[in-house]
Image (tube, rainbow over all chains, first blue to last red; front, side, top):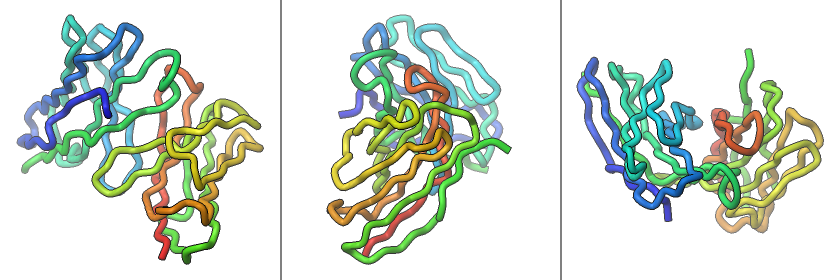
Length: 113
Length: 113
């Protein structure tokens, strides 16, 4: 019963921007959006998180819609090493569920040469 | 070189035996976590610890036990009571339990036959 919906898979050409969507229409005011990725048979890697403002770091940008019901993770110049499963996670700041990351099935991103 | 180490990477056991998975971190993080991942699925929380000598059950704690005697160590014991122990086990840590990103180790793949 994950609180997010993501496409099962996506392809992206190497060097192009990869835009990964996530729907979280039931998000509440104290819940953050986190993104992680998992390369095959490795531990998940933290990418970025945000509450309502757009965020950018050295790995990616996170665009959250004004109503906060959806977001997009942008990898500006995808490389073959970005091939992974990307997880969008909604996490409350306080209360039940605030200690854990609830992973859904994520989006399998394949970067094509 | 800071990080989280899990050993061994692969572990094989006979049914009915208890087995302990190691997790060590040198990030000086207060909080530590254990997750389980089954093929094609997201991660599920087994146990977490906010501070030394304290730990809490996650969503699937039955058949598992943990200890947190030192800040840097959070071993997980998979007991014979765990009905389906074969899985990929991931350890994570964070600066604090609330509102901070979790960093994952490389995982231990346990096979019980």
